[in-house]
Amino acid sequence: TPFDKSAKILFEQRNTIPSEQKSNVIFSEDGMTITLETKNETNNEFVKYSEFENIISTNDIILVIYKEKCVLLQKKELVSENISAFCEFVSIKTGCYHSIEE
Image (cartoon, rainbow, N blue to C red; front, top):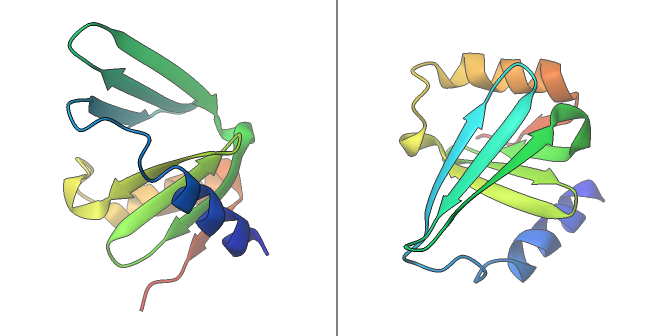
């Protein structure tokens, strides 16, 4: 199932980000920009919404899966003041949003 595939990807990538690395994720009208910063360099990746494979939302997190990669966002760290509006926005933009909130 899509959820099994998502869980497998997350598990496989769980230790791939160094602790000294800073990250920032911005959602715009056209897609998602991920910025990763280390002491020596800054890398940006832009992902069009059409490249999203799955978005899974729980009570505490939003898991974004794209191009066989994933981003785990903690809802408590989101800048958006309205989490429901954000979730509706990405749902409309991607067509692959799933909520499993209790």
